[in-house]
Each structure stands twice: as structure tokens, then as C-alpha cells.
Length: 463
Ligand SMILES: *[C@@H]1O[C@H](CO)[C@@H](O)[C@H](O)[C@H]1NC(C)=O
Image (cartoon, rainbow, N blue to C red):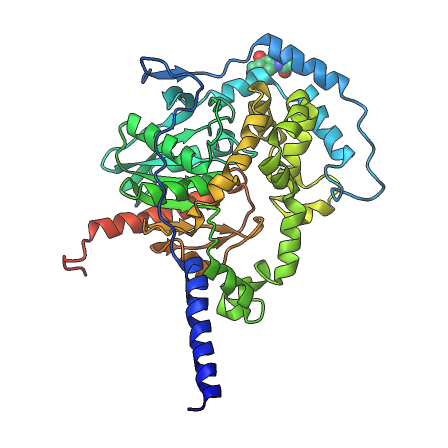
């Protein structure tokens, strides 16, 4: 070998070692951090209250009178530009019809009764009063009762689950189990207390809900969630795998370097990533990313300065309704941007949508709800790279076709290594609220698989 080729060989080997040292850590699985059990209030009492207290929603006349005054003062709205539908944000015609309904048809006395139809409780976890719905099945003879924790997201609330509750708690013919549901309000959302000190991100919410389930006597349980709820149940599976029998999410999220490389490669060879029938849900990539940008301006604001926009939304019920219900149009179906009425009442009843708005308004919790973005996208949280830590808990990822972003099932196994089910279903971002039957069927299908697995240990003969 001449000097030239020796030098060349050394250079190549050197480059190889350098690249390995530099690139390999990107693919390494980060270590699971110790989340601890922080106290979320400024001061800590000497004696911690662990009681479970029944709770009912009871809004004072003062709050209702104040709301009525604010709604009466709100008109006139800024007129929208000619022909823009929902493309500049919520159209004034749609907003007018919503506020009109709120003022003249929405009957709080009646809605409060509906909201109080399921047993609700509060209990203090790590300093915060956590509100939750707890529904036991009425009839359980001869069948198993499986605990299921259901977790909502933003800008939702426990209200999203009201229609799915009876489906999941009613025994079905030929099915040997039924669910007992525990449905908490996220800390800082609705009737759950908000943190007084920084740091309460999705992973810390997982700690709180694990502790809630332990308080209620559930050592092992199933979990289901969408939006932030999907991220929280995923965190529960990562940090407390011994407690989670199965995880069902309608917003599975995979953000490993390898999955992103594969997703980009799929732009050239989509058939490597996803079957032809569903390719249009993921590609062309630039178009999908463009739409994601269009729908996530709010996220940038809430991840950086949640409190400033919160001031306005906390002060104005009309602003709050416009800000939240805009999400219920385009996140349910992106094409509804092109509709004069935003499509809202195609899939939802206005009174149900307003129940959710009322939960934010009467508790004045919009600002504290938005802080979850700042806490979860903070440098401290992001540097932990928890997204890249896989879980082997039996999992199901339900992808709804109109959701903001769809992770191809072929990439999900990088994070959910024991993925038993990954159906692509009809519906949008708020699946529980929009298509409760579709979501419930997917949950039943998944849990049947997990229950059958646990009944057939590998060593025993099967037939
Ligand atoms: C509101 O609902 C309550 C309870 O269902 C009913 O008694 C009352 O008459 C209703 N009010 C109006 C204005 O319709």
C-alpha cells in the first residue's frame, strides 16, 4: 500500500469512528428519569388529607348572572371578510349562531343535571384536589369488571366521554367483561385544581393519575386517552408498566430519529411505510406538514406564553367559545374550513359543545389548562427525550382519518413494541365525543385480545 492509500484508509476509518461516536447517541434509548412525587402547592400541610369526597357541579347564581351580562355585552362581532368561510379563523356568522344558542336555548339548570348524572368525586393527590367521574357497571353477574382510566386532552374535558360511558359500562352479549370507568379532569382543567408551582407536565400528570388509581385501590388497570390524554396514558405505560394491563390511545405519538428518517424516506417510497389505500393520509408530506402548521399556531403560543392569551380568554366567554370551538371544526374535519357554518352541528349537538365551554368558563380554567403546553414543551421536559423511550405494555393505537397527523402503523412499533392493534378508523381528533361507538368498538376489540393473551400462558397447550 502506498502512502496515499494508507492515508486514505486512515481517513475513512477515522471518519467511520467519528460518525459512529457522533451519530450513535442519536439512536440510543434515553434513560428513564426519576419523576419523584412533587408537591404541587406552595405550602405543604403537616397532615395530608387522603379522603375521597363526593362532588356535584353547583354553579352559583352570581357566576351565571355575570356570564349572562358578558354575553349580552358582546355584540357586535367583527364582520368577516367576504367569502372566507373559516379560513381566517372563526367566521362571525358561525360565532353569532353559537352565542345566540348559548343565550336563548342553552338551559344551565337542565345541563347541570345532565353533567351531574354520573357519580363524581374529589381527592387530594400531591397537594391538588383532583376531580373525577367514577362509573361502575350496573350489572356484572358472571363477567369480569375491568378498571379503565380514561384521559381527556385540550381543549376538551370529561364531557367528551359522557356518550361513551354507557357503551363501555353495559355488558354485551358474548363478552365476558365490562368496564369500571375512572375519568379524571386533568390538573388545571375544569374541576381539578391547578398547580401553584412550575413543572406539571404530561409525565407528572401520569404520576398523579397513577397515585389516584392506587388511592382508589386499583393496583392494575387499563388506560385510554386521546390528545394530551394519549400522551399521558403513553407515559403511564412507559413509567409504570407493572400497573398498566393495556394501553389504548387515539393519539399515539412516535418521535424517534429512526421513525422520522423512515417517514421522510416514505416520501419517495410510500409503499414501504403504509399501504396504498391510506397513503393519502400521510403523503405528500409537505402538504400534511403545511396543514399541521395551519392548525398549530395556538400550540406555539401556549407552549411559550400561555398566560398572556389566557388573560383575554379568561375574561371573555365569547372569545373562549370562538377559540375552543374553532378547534372542534377543523380538527374534526379539515375540510370544514370551507363551510360557512364550520360543519360543527354535522357531528355534535350545540348544547354538548357548550357544556365543554361551560366547564372551562365556570371554573375559569383556560389559562391553567394552556400551561400544560408550556410545561410539556419546556427545555427541561424536552431534554429528557421521553418520546424516545419505548414501552412493551400491550398497546393499541387507533388512528382516526381526519386527525391532525397520522403516524403510519408501521412506525408505531418503535415506541409501542407490543402493539397488538393499529386500526385506521373513520372520525377526527375528538373521537370519544364525535364517534363514541367507533372508539368503544376498538377498545373492546383490543381488550378482548389482551384478556385472551393473559388467559393463555405461553407454556400451556392451546388449541
Ligand atoms: C330549564 O330546564 C329546567 C329543568 O329541566 C326547567 O324546569 C325550566 O323550565 C327550563 N327553563 C327554560 C327557560 O326553558
